[in-house]
Length: 65
Image 1 (cartoon, rainbow, N blue to C red):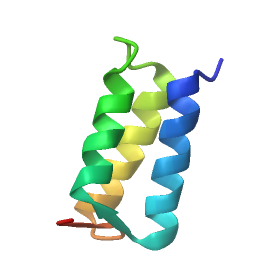
Image 2 (cartoon, one colour; image 1 turned 90 degrees about the vertical axis):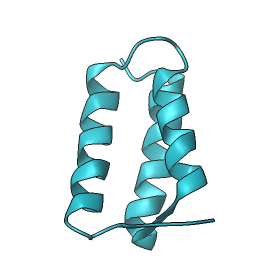
Image 3 (cartoon, rainbow, N blue to C red; image 1 turned 30 degrees about the horizontal axis):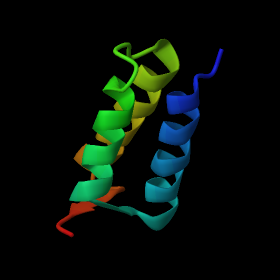
Image 4 (cartoon, helix red, strand yellow; image 1 turned 120 degrees about the horizontal axis):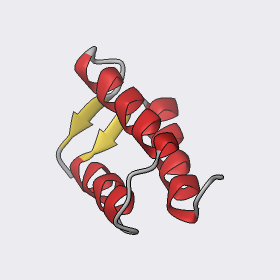
């Protein structure tokens, strides 16, 4: 089941992937959303891993606000 925070997380991450850029504030929002309900579910873990992989290989660039 997709949680509300998981759905919002997915939207923010997809935007970052489409833009190839993620601001530090967006990244912090993603982390806060993931921890919001006290549980990082399987779907959220996959999304976070994908985002971190894309940042690591520079497909998505993390930038200052």
